[in-house]
Length: 148
Ligand code: ADP
Ligand code: MG
Image (cartoon, rainbow, N blue to C red; front, side, top):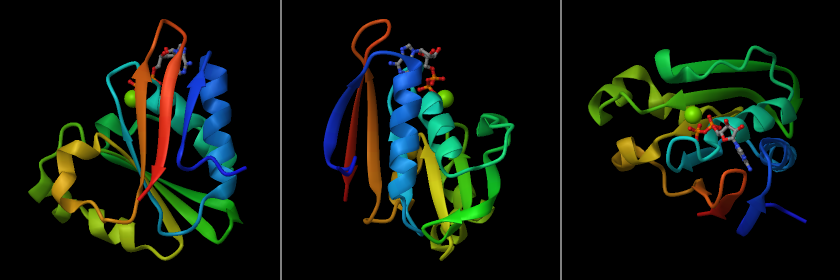
């Protein structure tokens, strides 16, 4: 069954990674994944699973200090050849355009994983997948995946 338009509760970081791997197998080119939720809610953990799932090469660095990290896939998945992991935490919308956000979104063979999408809300395409993370308890996370 497809993972989109569903709500999940995971009970460990590994379960959250597994969910990321599952979504990775369903991914199509030109998809923007928007990950939102508080610090520690599991965005990076999920992204690691997702990157594993598409066969991206380690190391999976958090892009917090580089804004964007690009992964060129050795073996394309469903026509996806590149993934752009982007962190908008420290960026203003206007700078984000200059940096090349729309070009990454328009890459016909790429997908974008965007953390802190609310920071660049004005620039988000209507067609996207919103993934929201909530801490329920120390080891439980509620993860909603909605395809817009
Ligand atoms: P974010 O990127 O949203 O700030 P991280 O993925 O970096 O969050 O951190 C999540 C933290 O919570 C990690 O230390 C992870 O081990 C822990 N954790 C505990 N339970 C879970 C779970 N069910 N899913 C994801 N992370 C979990
Ligand atoms: Mg993070």
